Image (tube, rainbow, N blue to C red; front, side):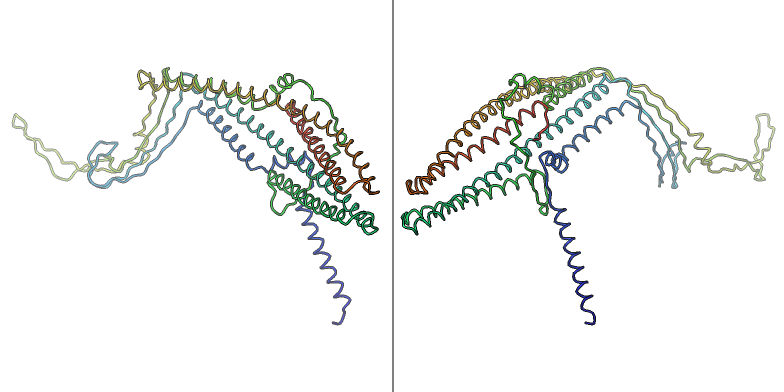
Length: 480
C-alpha cells in the first residue's frame, strides 16, 4: 500500500460513521417516558381505540345519512336496446318483424312529505347514538389511562423492590466477610459461616426473582403501549416523596356527586335513554299515514317509428265508376316514407308525470304493534342500564375510598414497623459482630426487616394508586 495513513483514516471514518448510525438507531428505538407520556402514547397507538374510533365514524355517517333523507332524491336512467323478431314498438304500438333499435331516457324525483315524523325522530336517535359513541370512546380512553397508571406504578414498585433486595444482599455480603474473618480467628464456629453463605444464596435468588418481576412489569406496560419488539422502554421515576400522605377527601357521596357530571359512561347511558325514547316515537310513526310526492320526465327513440314526407305519382290511373255511370280517373300516388329523426322522436315522445301518493296502514299482521312493544322494552332496558351504571359508579367510588383509607393505615403502620425493626436489626447486628448472637437470630432479624420493608413498599404504592383512582373520579389528571 502506497499510503497506509490514508487507509487508516478511511477505515476510522467508516467505523465512526457506522457507530454514529448504530447509536442513532439505538436511540430511535429507545423510549424514555413519564406517566403522562405513557398515557398519550397508549392513546395514540392502541389498536382497540382506533377500532372504536371507526365505530364513532360509522355513527357519524348514519347521522349524516338520516339528515340527507329529508331532501328529495333525483335519479336518471338511459337504455340502448335491440329487439329481434316479432315485437311491438313501444312508441307506435305497431308490430315489427325486423330488428329494432330503441333508446329510453328518463329522470325522476321523489320527496317524503310526511311519515309520522319518522325522519325527524331518526335524526334525533342517530344524534343521540353518536353522542353515546363519543362518550364510550372517552370511557375507553379513561380505562386505558388507569391501566397504564397501574402498570406504571407496578414498574416503580418492582424497581424499588430490586433496590431493597440488592441492599439486603450487600449487607449479607459484608456480614459474610466479617463472619469469615471471625471464623478464621476462631471466634465463631464454621457453621455460622455456612449459615451466612446459605442466606446469601437465598437472597441472590430473591434478587433474580425481583429483577424478573421488574422485566415482566416492563413487558406488561410495553404490551399496553403496543410497542414493537425493536423498541425498548424506560420510565421516568418521579419524586414520590413529595406526594402528600393524607386521608382521602371528600366523602364517597360527595365524590359520587362530582363523578356523575364527569364520568362518560353515565352520560352515555343517559344519551341511550334519549335514543330509546326516539326509537319508541319512530315505531309509533308507522301507525300514521305517509304522504309522498314524486315526478318523472321521460322520452325515447325507436327505429320502427316512420313518417310520410311526400307523394309521387306512379303514372297509372285508378278508375272509379259512380252510381250515375260517370267514370273518374285518379292518379295512383306512391308515398315516400322515412325513419323519423332522432330529435323529433325525443320531442314527440316526451312524457311528464307528477303524483301525490298517500299510504294508510290498516292491518300489517301486528308488525307495528310488535315494533312499538320492542321499542318500549329497549327504553326500559336503557333506563335500567343507567341505574346499573350509576350504582356501579357509587360502589366503585365507595370501594376505592375504603381501599385508600385502609392502604393509608397500612402504610403508616408499616412505617412504624420498619422503624422499629431497623433499630432492632442494628442492635442485633452489633451483638452478632461481637459474638453475642448466633447467625440464626441475626438472619431472623434481617429477614423480618426485609419483609417489613417490602410490606411498606407495597402499602405505599397501593395507597398512591388508590388515591389516583379517587383523583380520576374527581376529574383530576393522572400524573405525579
